Amino acid sequence: MYIPKHFKMEDEAEIYEVFEEFGFATLFSQHEGEPYASHLPLMLNKSEKALYGHFARPNQQWKDAEHQQVLAVFQGPHCYISPTWYETNKAVPTWNYVSIHVYGKLEVIETPNLVFDSLNDLVKKYEGPNSSYQLDEVEPYFIEGMSKGIVAFRIHITKIEAKAKLSQNHPVERQERVIQHLENSPHHDSQQVAALMKKNLRK
Image (cartoon, rainbow, N blue to C red; front, top):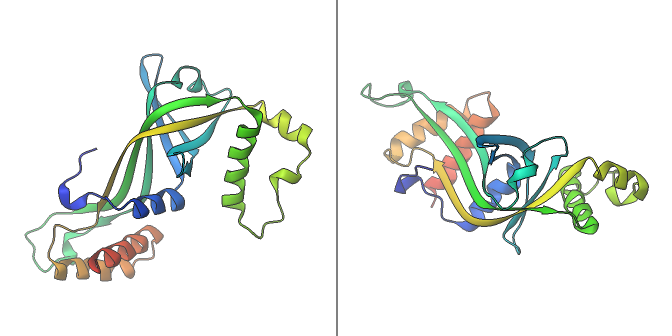
């Protein structure tokens, strides 16, 4: 990924926050000689430096993705930046965004308890602590049957590229003007970008 130096994210904690909040990723590999992508939730295991996920078994991507160097793209908030928000008319439109590319070797998981643990972690994250639904309370035979319809995997992370393009290449006064416009936007992504820009200005 092309990352100018002022847009490069290097703080590991901030990168992990993006994984946590925007866990629905696009996973790319080569399938039958062509680029192939699947859209799926991925879970980060910090201690293992690995991502966990699963394919639907009919999805042909898993059949030759194992041992490949794959790419998972996590897309954070993004929004249009209008030049009318600047103090000058010598400007052009642009786009602010956060994006993380994760490279690694994919390994298919067949051990039943590891498959269940990866699914259970996913459910716990998105159901929330007060949910009445608990995967470990579902009848084992039902889980076993449903598990036959998926292919679980682990990606051993080899490289992470992280980019936060948040107008850092503009003067502070201009950044503040952009933040003000974004905060007044009805769009959630715009408001999230504004919050990230304010956080970046405080550093």
